[in-house]
Length: 141
Image 1: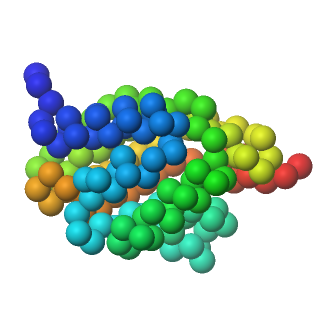
Image 2: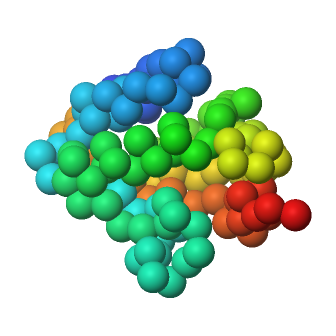
Image 3: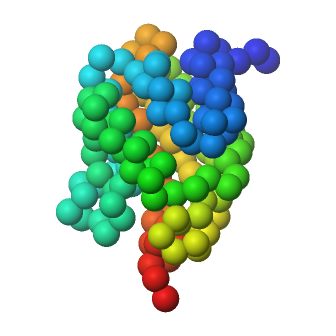
């Protein structure tokens, strides 16, 4: 069965993200709606010790999220495994391995992205990953 247009957009974006090693935030912002929202770990920053765990509203804040990711983490492996679409939502499950630049430690985990679309532009992205593994990677011995 052929991919829907939204799944095709996401497959292309993930492929570009892997090819640029996470260095081009426009891979995602190019298909963002006018006022996109990104929830990383579905929490507000004050509730989680990971710097990136927060709610980001608008292109500028989401751009800052990707700047922080590039500053703090080196992507080693990123492989989208499954795409599931229902109405205006697409769930993407990936396996990722990243290195914390501050410690050199790695985190290897599943990553879930839940995309909500408005037409063919994403309006909301909820990101879920193993925060414990990420915390262990950024914590100095």
